[in-house]
Length: 190
View: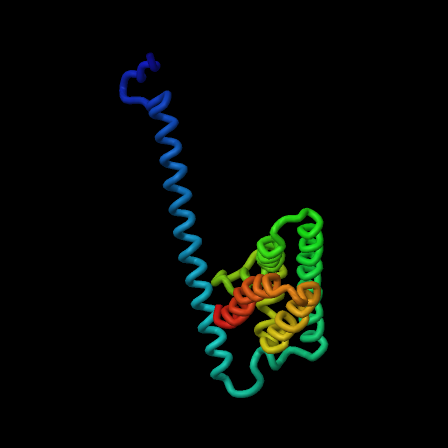
């Protein structure tokens, strides 16, 4: 039998106490999640209003005020992370070919995994934790057209080279890259 409760209505013990602690922990976690989501929404609204305010001002915008050297450095860093992701996908593709697994599925999954930071950049987070996602968001603000070009022409082109002649791999490449280009476009509004 479970231990008796102390006289005078003390704290419950045994399974009832454990269930009560667990319920309190879940409630606290749910409340914390709700508060973080509310804070994120408020920060996104402030960012949107700040961009709208800057766009309404006459004279150079914030992006136009960035020196060519700083812009070049930022775009160079983004090119490096895109190249790194592309190389990782190519390594996975070679490994899938050696392992005789479904190359199309492995290719698409690898693109999703190694380019996840691009999707994160447009995910509606006020401040992405991944530095690569922050770089993509910065590059989108500085020069979205160049960023899309780097993603679509350079990264996709690099990954398309070993796919030449294989329609299924090219289709997997397109399916994998569509969310990336959409995320870059979305990062302009978040």
